[in-house]
Length: 216
Length: 318
Image (cartoon, rainbow over all chains, first blue to last red; front, side, top):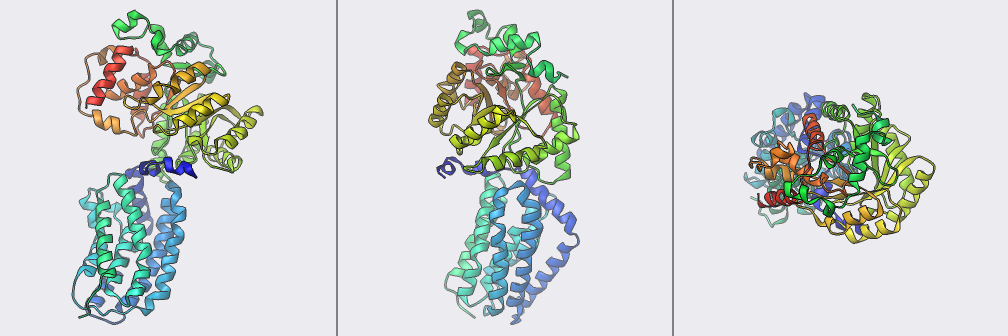
């Protein structure tokens, strides 16, 4: 397969930014009013985590499992794959992540009590539609957690940053980080500055999940 | 509208002139033309229709690419816009529409558009095989996407599985499922291998990247194509839009008016089409007005060698 070595990153950018963002517009129209319901559910879980409810993290893990499954089907399979054949290889990873969250999520605990970087990632994910608006896109093209992959991955990293034991969190972070790197590369190749937000999220995710941390 | 018989069968007098002019090497331009910086009237006409050397068919010099622009999935709004682009293309004489299995949903978009437009007679259908093995299966998938049984041209995309795929394509050509066979490259990739295949196989077409800044093919590939009677398709005439952005806002040179060029895009297309080795250029666009403008660019006077050099120099400086 030496032919592949001849290609540059831009050669694999098969679609325009317009076609890409229109995918979210079409999905949002079809899924409405799921968006406010999903946001409300994860906001409630975030508040529960801030209030140190012991069930908050594993409940979020189960919710995230549903979010990864919904994103795999509603966005990747129905919308994205028709314009990006490479996504066919990514969809199974999203289903694997959903399965891992179901398997490992109930064993997660929430030992961290201070508000910190994990909460920043969670807030970033829940307010991600604003990122698109700041970048100049209309609200109808908003990327909403539970339906769109980027905020779903960021939210996952945020909740994992709150959770223990670390080995479970580190297993569960692999696919979200992999996705965010792929998506960042795609967005930056398209000239979309929001790709930097994803790279920042990866850096913060590594910081809160992989570096030694103290329980308070 | 030019019908398929006059365009593709080489019946028009202008088309015959075009074919003759199309065989001239760049160096053969007359001193008068050079001093004026313009080609002759006959060569100006040549820009509109070009002859495919191996079969003698005439083809509009400006075709339509589908890379990125027609990859719109199931989006009804963007599908409709793609149909508008195709409609404008056929209203301006039609010609080659080129796609590839690599281009996402572009093949399906074209098939959808052709069905909506009633499969226009002036279509010259061109697609590619892009797989190491299983070329026959991919050919079938491509026919299904276009909703057609026959292609005017089928190419091996970026030399992937080139020997095996060419064998399959020549066999299909022999039974009439394909009109012409070719190979492609883009972005200056694998030119030595490309040249080797050109020398060893009886190709009808080659497709390569050529524009005001990417001119490597002028050294060997374009002269070789002219020598062997291989038609040349030019892709990425604007470097995927980068050259349009580069020239945006820059004043046009004074001689642009002599060529009938009103935009830098016109000038850059004329630069490509004024190379006599070039048969078709296939800019991709999402705008019907750009389709029409691209077609107009092929119909006016063409730059001579001095103007060509000046166009390239000016764009390089921007």
